[in-house]
Length: 100
Image 1 (tube, rainbow, N blue to C red):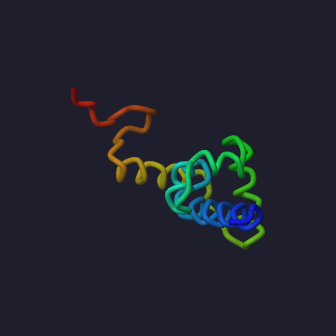
Image 2: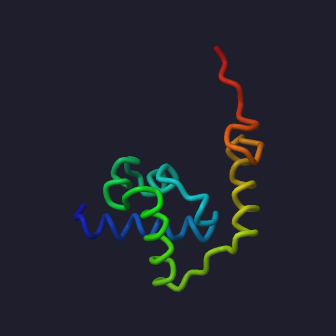
């Protein structure tokens, strides 16, 4: 896939995920899974986490998409963590124990 098309695809996927889950809840892994590519490729095209989120926010605005406010984003993040099996609000809290 051409670089410009891949970059546009990743921005599109990421912006739509940001609308659905909240910008601060979008990760490289989420984008990579939806775009069917590696996390590394997402990093190559969208940069570090701060740059990636800034690009996704800009692209969402360009598409006329409305991102959730901070309160809604926090609620969406809690639902997302619960769905993934991570019960707590703190990082690592409520994660399933690793079985030996």
